[in-house]
Image 1 (cartoon, rainbow, N blue to C red):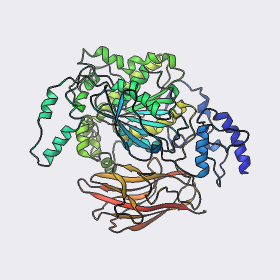
Image 2 (image 1 turned 180 degrees about the vertical axis):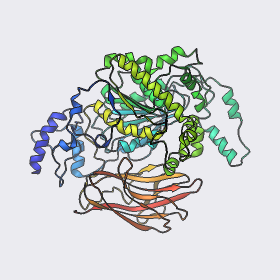
Image 3 (image 1 turned 45 degrees about the vertical axis):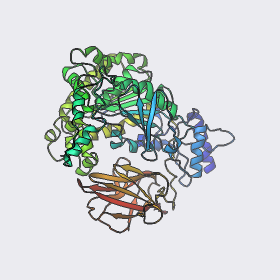
Image 4 (image 1 turned 90 degrees about the vertical axis):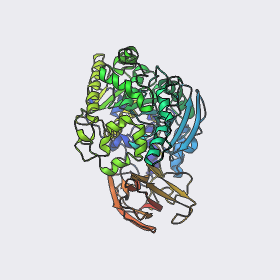
Length: 635
């Protein structure tokens, strides 16, 4: 039967995977689980990819010996796999995994000098650059597909942050989890906290004092009772010394994107790039795709400020440089004098550039109306987790102070706890309608995902990315085989990889906020190493994504100990969207204690195993974990 099944798959493969990397007609995990609400297509799709069969319409999978991701058949005399497909098939056949970040060796090119590289986890690598286009170093976060292969050509989704944000923001909003089993590369860009992703017209003050952390250092000194504050930094800020204006657009378009194509295994063409962003980043995404449509096949704006025509948004743009310690009105100029430069970058004013591409482009808009919505009240532990370092958050995001206050005061009425979120989203609502009106007038298709009630809040952007990802994947067309993230699920085999934490770096383990490995410090239950999560505020978590068999009972076990002040935290298993399948509230364990949970997987084939600690402000709280296992037996 297995041979007959494989022969039948050969036909599928030959029809759908002749391009390097191959393609599966079945949806990815993200496509199958994302819920799409409020879609309003202005032009019915005739793309045959949208009529691909669903998972339920595929041939059933032989549970004893499932095919590898992407329906890659075993090589036979009748078929020759591409190098990409053969590599993925070999990994599946040998039931092995590969750590993606170990396959990347960043090199300097396109005018970028590498200042540092930092491995965040097995999929995520931060690369910090200096450039003549910038007045400070900038970091790009590269999130690779699980079991990344140099033989495959992956499409890239570029993600832009909002005002006051950094390259880390989309990690906080779950981008890595959302793409856990999707064969694409994410690039999370540091594009300047108040830059509007443009080449500024006027120079910076000396040294970008806020971005370099000097103000933060002085505030910390003041809080700690020190009297050695360096007031010279404030005088420097008021006495600008021409260093040249930061050119964020030139850095991103002319240097970073070509660098990514040179250093990673990408599909180096238009149908291999998409761009999306939130708030100011939504503006950036639409500004770039309307002015560089030859570079991107898809663009999405999440609460994007996509029309900078009126006076209010012009003033907003004007004062934004203050967020990064630059003088106001240094991007396009003061109101009145900025009209030509501002409108030249305005997405709504540039939609006509898309006319040659209107039959081959995907545009999507997600936005609320400014009224309090279902996702505007954030549970206190999640709210704290989004603000792991309040001093850093305070000094790095003046705009975020106004727009995200509800994270710290989640139980107050929204218009009191979020004094700017409703105003911002009301403006955003009108901007999106303006741009859509221009697109419709020219017959350029777009998707309208206005969700009604909702303010300028991160929880909506997290959900919007989950909903948008299947549409972006559809725009990309043929994809490499889905990642072999983890050795395939087998009855009696431990689904956890590196459960004793003996692999180098973080291996398959990932972090929310602060976690890691204690290597050779004598803290392990047994062996040399153990995992830990620790912090002084919010949720700190260590986690791993695993493959499981559906409709099986699994036993999760781990040895855990905690600080004696431990008061809140969980161990458990959950869906990739955060919905818990099973969790257990932890209590203080000053000695290693074995904890065991049992649960049924129902229809799930992929879950996330985690352990976390929720710390109270200013109180150092930790947990240590070792010898984690997840095993099932015949039902």
